[in-house]
Image (cartoon, rainbow over all chains, first blue to last red; front, side, top):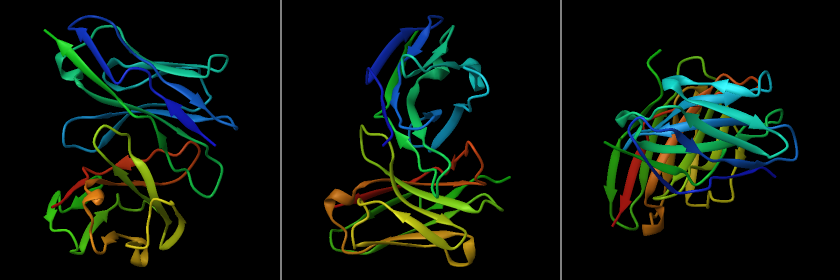
Length: 115
Length: 114
C-alpha cells in the first residue's frame, strides 16, 4: 500500500527566505509523486510531478522537488518565498499501472509567508 | 480548455436531506475521480470512473453515497439522508490517463450539514 507523510503541518518563513516542505513516501512499487497547492476555498493545482525521468523536478512558480529513493523523500523547495506562496501544499503518491491511479495525499502543510 | 467545473460551489442542508453534486470534466478526459476533503486533512479518494464505468469505490463510500457518469461525460455524486459527518469539501478530478497520470481538479463543492 502507498502512503505519504508530510512533516510539519504549519511552516512559517519570511519573504525572500528558503521554503522547504517535507514529504516522505512509502510504496511497494516505483512511485509516481506529486505536489499540489491549494489556495483558500479553491481546488488543487498541480505544482510538479516525479516521473522517474529525472530526480530533480522543476515545477511552476519557481518550485522544485528532488526524489531521493534512499531516503524515500520528495521534499519541495523554493529558493525565495513570495507572499503569494502562502497556501496549503499537499504531497501525493500514485501507484500507477493499475486499473486506477487514485492519489493518496498527505495531510498537508500550511505555508505562511511573513513580510 | 475550460477546466473542471463543479456545481454548486456551496451547499447548506439539514440533516436527513438528500443532496446531489455535479462535476463536468475537461472535455475528452475519460477518467473521473471524486475525493472528499475534511478540515485539516488531505483529500481522500471516494470513487473512480473510466468513461461511464465505475471501476473502484472506497470503503469511505457508504450505502448512502452513489455516483454516476452517464454517457461518460459529466458525473453526479448523491448523498442520501445526510449526516453532520458528511460536511466536507467534495472534489472532482479528471484525466486522460497515462503514466504518470495527471489529475486536474475542480474548485470543489463545500457541503455543510446542519
